[in-house]
Amino acid sequence: MSSSELTCMTVEDVTDLYEEFGDERLPPGQRETSAFPVLSKGETPPFDPDTWEFTVTGAVETELSFTWDEFCDLPSVTQRQDFHCVTGWSKFDCEFTGVPLLELADRAGVSDDAVHIMFSALDDYTTDLPLEDCLREEVLFAWSFDGEPLTPDHGGPLRVVTPHRYAYKGAKWVDGMEILTTAERGYWERRGYSQTANPWREERYS
Ligand SMILES: Nc1nc2c(c(=O)[nH]1)N[C@H]1C(S)=C(S)[C@@H](COP(=O)(O)O)O[C@H]1N2
Ligand SMILES: [Mo]
Image 1: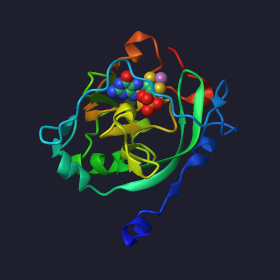
Image 2: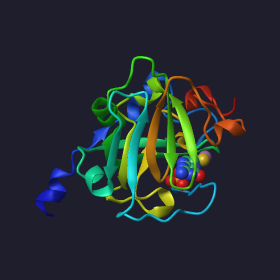
Image 3: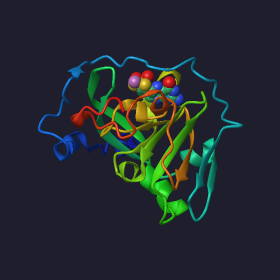
């Protein structure tokens, strides 16, 4: 094993975060699976590293923009997390590597009147979450899953992971976040899915 592989092996285990929300690691109404199904509203969009741009906009002191190379240079962490799909399956012990949302929020400087975040993606998917649900250490912009680059179907090159919320809150092919001063609804949220999506309260629909 090379030294670079060794230095990548610091894995932070956040699979106990359920203790904040419920008694059981497996949320009610979920069944555990070892598979990793693909759930997308449409086709997997193409990714061009030369034109890809990631932006942080809205209620911030400084709007940010990154090329793919610049994004890859940001500090990253590796975490062991669980993954809960609103359709009823949960996958334990996923290893994701990526940039904490807190890192980007820090750099942009979130305004005092900010309350919500809207995530955008290359397939025109959007999803929203209250700001307080985003400013948590386990919310990552992940580019790697289980030690390999994130595959295109699972959101490669970059996706959001939200182990404390149903997985539709984690935009695959994410290319930006807009900080909002009033709550707005994303793609599934406009179609009746929950804005808060807490699996231990079974907040599936609104
Ligand atoms: N851009 C984008 N992100 C998305 C989706 C999508 O259709 N487009 N589907 C969501 C849903 S409903 C789920 S359950 C998860 C599924 O992630 P997976 O395909 O890696 O299992 O991605 C979420 N993120
Ligand atoms: Mo989903």
